[in-house]
Amino acid sequence: AEAYAAAQLAWAAGALARSRAEHPGRWRLAVGHHPIWSSGQHQFEDDGRMRARVLPVLEAGGVAAYFSGHDHDMQHIKPPGTPLHQVISGAGSKVRPTASTAPDAGARLAMGRQGFAVVSLARERMRLQFVTFEGAWSYLAEVPRPGAEGGASAFDPSQPGGGGAGARGGLPGEG
Image 1 (tube, rainbow, N blue to C red):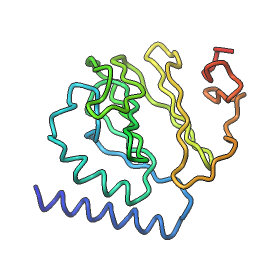
Image 2: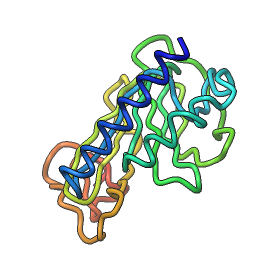
Image 3: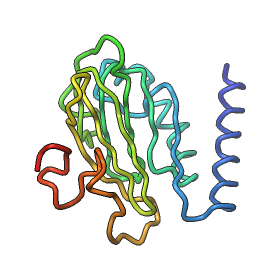
Image 4: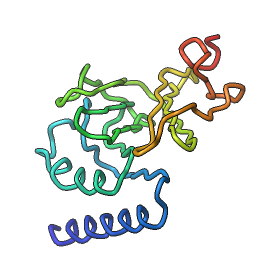
């Protein structure tokens, strides 16, 4: 198992390095099953192995967000000291309760409800939204692309989930 994990990490590091070299200034997102951080039921089960082994590969590769499941809830975590955002969207099954904060802080959302994440990408920003099982838009965050210069977001407020800085709360139906 150890050799397999080492081979997978080496492959990921190489693929991300090639992506950065061939496509500078583009979004890099990663998807895995187990979270790096969590406010959910599995928050302490890996003894920091994901942070010790996977986090450095993702950071060196310029990954903006790591999407996972495993916990049956909806979470957005942005710990201090890293550009990486953790998004957990594992709430399509029986939900489990969440703590109010992640063990390392940085929890922006920890919701033990059924639902899913919606992600939209613009050149400089990623819009992350969570939608509950009942269809309510329950959370909105805009994440800058690592290395982005900043500036205006290119999201269209007339589109579903488009929000926009002018919308009260930025959520559809809240204006």
